[in-house]
Image (cartoon, each protein chain N blue to C red):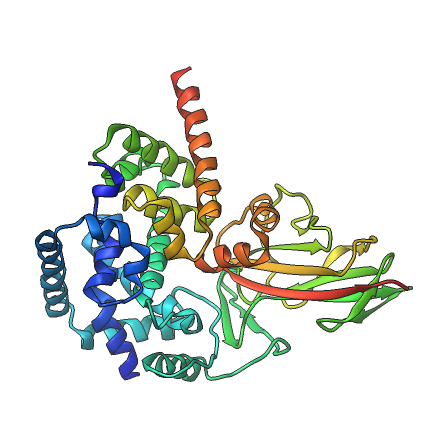
Length: 162
Length: 263
């Protein structure tokens, strides 16, 4: 066992657990996901940024939890809408609608990085600039990806409305 | 509440850990916050940190994390890396010790298929996805090295090793910015990888007169990928942007670049 793993957990474990709890709801699932996130981080230690390790751990946790949610949503006993409703706790009516529809669409074929960006934008309420800063992409790149999702979500809403 | 009036959780987490960079990313938002309100939220985080560490002690959690790593769940390629100083250097060393091997692009991937299930693949050492390019001349194929020269009308063959990953997309980007999807054979096809060692794609690829280079990328993951999205990312975001996106997603990326010359 390395003392550094301990330090990593002491410094960031509570943050990762909070993130997993927020997205997954269940304490048991969150605890398991948190351990998996650390395994993943340790295997990718070369990508850790000493200046801002929180960002990487947080986005990996987000991505990992969205994957778990997506896997769960493929099971018929779990309703997509309920999951999305739970994670997209946004008070603004219009934002909330887009979050639900967009994150719902996201669970399908979108890239993992797009899902992570969407979660940071719609679940966490970050701005395009903040999302770009955290995931290391250009603002225009983030804007373009999320604009594409809005179009998809709008089309889905129109489809539902008939 | 407007987006700008909320306090993103990541911003608070970074602030509570004193990460200096946070100021530049969230400058506008921080300026609008009252220091009292911010302090309340940060104290809540610190209290929750303490509760978590008391309920899930470092001893217990580190043991669980190490056990999970040792058991290979989730299964991932393990990399031996070097880092600059600080405690991350120790982390890298720990990862290297756990993986028990340092390796480069040419290290062999060794996998043992379980008798009980084709999905149960055990990595022995140094596994990571790798793409290689072979030059076909007549009936023979010669392995090219990264950076080798090729020319218009050369026919190349694409091979890969899965590194234990279940899915992958192989694309190439030429000097005109045109992206070609090599695996899957159809853009909407299955991205499942054959995990049995060296795999040769079933067709040759004749190079055209695009200048400068042909860059091949293998993007590998444990879940189904969308080849169209991979292609689109390269076209719209360029190599650096696309690579960042893939790496943020936890995908493995291997690149093999050939230089184009006129003969």
